[in-house]
Length: 313
Image 1 (cartoon, one colour):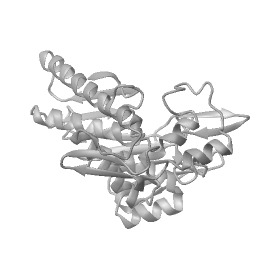
Image 2 (cartoon, rainbow, N blue to C red):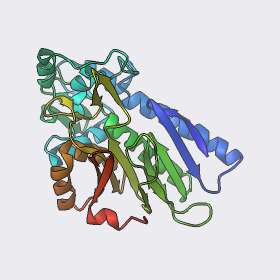
Image 3 (cartoon, one colour):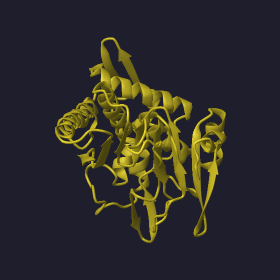
């Protein structure tokens, strides 16, 4: 098992039938790929490609890597699908509420004043960004636009590690970065990989066991990254429409999808949409999703038909 740190969180890679020198070689290859991805998508590193685009304060096209353009294109597609519930231009509000790179431990986080929030909202709109594939470039129609790809980049990194392992000849592995997972093939004992989806409670316990096959599992919740101010808890999950943390009884959403970037972004979109609208979209699109709703001290699970087909218990 290979472990380490990337994108402000931890990663774990399990590769079946890879030990000794093989494991050392793959550890180096994985670290090299993750460092390259972090230098591409990090909004914490000042010299990353994403940070340089965020400082690009004109409407001129910004020459970008094919990777950054591809992930931006995927993000825009999910933004359109969710009618803006998922929006990588939400960065001004994320930063304003203390969930950006300036205050990693939320030590100084507090609700912003209405004037600051109103100003931030003027620079949140995925429709103010364009992508071009040849030559690859990004464009802001609003120069104040800045991006936060944290709700899709970790998933994309998982997918890239999966391609790395596949190209190296491995077909049985499990990859996890910050809770986003992708499985392939079988475990060392020959059984299919099984994933535990935990309930959003302080005392963790298994809520569901799923068997995703050669798919990804991603979860978005309001219970891991938050701060409290005057007795009120504020989640890192920001609704782009209001610029405020999501405030609903929906505590978490998990999605199973063919690739992790898609699962990662869709889980965020469905959480922002809330139970009623999120379930309607997931059902309409045939998504495999489970919604965990708070009911006092208890939790109620609502799952789509597509999710039920992966459920073991």
